[in-house]
Amino acid sequence: MLELPEPVDNPALMAAKMSAQVSRAMHGRKVDVLLSAPNLMRLPIHDMVFKEGKLL
Amino acid sequence: MTVEPKIALRLQFLARVVRKECKHLTTTDQRLFGGLFTLEQATRLEEDPDLGERVEAFVGRFGRLQDTVGDKLLPSLLAALGEKPSAAIDNLDRAERLGLLKSADEWMTMRNLRNQMVHEYVEDPVVLSSALQTGHAFVPALIATANKMISEIERRGWA
Image (cartoon, rainbow over all chains, first blue to last red):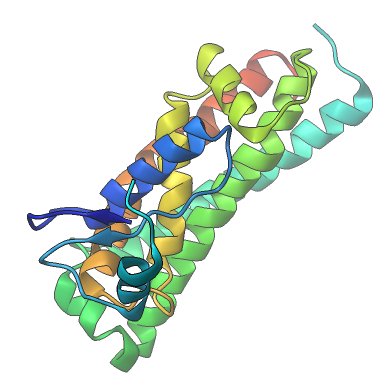
């Protein structure tokens, strides 16, 4: 998950680009990127990541 | 350069499929995106079954064309060109080097966008409308890639 302090204009494109970059760094392994930003809904998956995720 | 009849038949079949898929995607793209896909439309998808079906058709056809081109046509074309079979990411890099694909990274971005276009899964209408608008913006690049591979096959007299 990527936590952003500002609203993001095109969240789907940003997440897809980030996924592609991380996936390339991991030799093609599939990666899903979740965004958290002030203009996006806060969903249960965000709460779970905030609670259980590790800060990188 | 000649290829085995079995490979030529496979390329010819895939070229026919890809031509049809390009045509279908273009039709659905025009039907869904008279204007931009708005946040308001994303919000009322559940109450508008006709719009929901158009979204589903667009997402399905976008994904199908990308799968046929990236997972079937590209590996077959690379094999016909004498390249060794490889992992998907390496095939994409090779295609970029051969000029069959504008950008492997852009292709992977398009691939990763697809999950965010599925309206039953994506609960945030901001994300859904952003994904569909971006998918729409990628349609010319997707079709151009498909056409480039078909042109290469035709140029070599394989289809």
